[in-house]
Length: 394
Image 1 (spheres, rainbow, N blue to C red):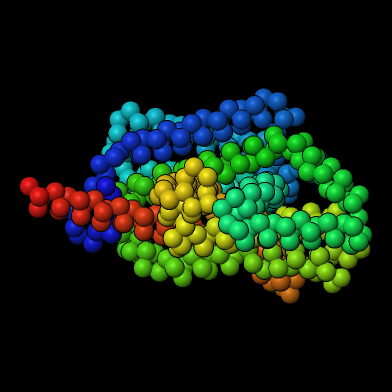
Image 2 (spheres, rainbow, N blue to C red):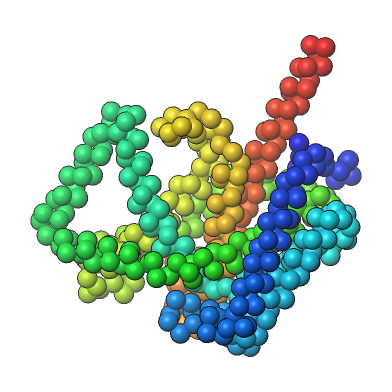
């Protein structure tokens, strides 16, 4: 079991399960291969190049490399980054992780991530994530209500109150029933963007995987001992700060349900206002789930969760989605900051507070890291106690 908290100067970490390393490197190499194939297709058939998109599905102007050098050069950069990733992964898998200098592997991991995450991706990543989260939250809310009704008596009254409130809203004309049809049409229209969503999320996943490869190599070489100890010691504060990241945006979206909407929503039809509030639902879900990283239910499934009630939450169940969301936020931060800079001082600072990806992304990354360190430390202590008890019994 990995001991993340060994003091500097002590024995190296015990990486007894190297299969995790190999799987991570294999995934990173596969992601690099897919990026290479995608870039080759873009170069061979320029009409398919997302960097030359004219439909508005991808804001090409805020893609750093695309804005500086154009779509062809950007595709070439993606091809180069993908091939470097594939080559590095093959060497590490065939000859072992010690076959290349640690510093070189770390630099390659960071370089691939920077080229793809900062050079190619833009704020479209967080926009697409917001669309999908709105749908996931709606579906998840239905499941949650069903489980609360099944498990708790008060849940039935809450569900009844929600249904009654919805009926009153539409029966009194506060929100025209026609708005639901228009809203359904907007949701159905997301199908036309599935290809773009897949590409953007794939590039974001590649960015994350190569950052993780660099981090694992750095951790193995004892480069992260002190930062890890600091993060673990302050993880509760870090997690609370991360949970506050989406709050400004979510609160502003709630004003869209009032006669005093903020953010240019005056005069907008009800369906657009509802859609705007739905987009903020992912932020509310993110706030709650982030707090789960320091809560008991983030380590053990609550009793209302079907099939898994009372079982330990696998570390990857929380760390995987959390890391991916953090990567989305990080790759969206740089283009958003560039866009804020063009708005002027007052407007730019206001936008930076409303959309604090520059703060939310790093804080969420550290919060997830702290969660992993906490869970691994707990598993190490439990294993030590079992071993000690076995020795005593023997």
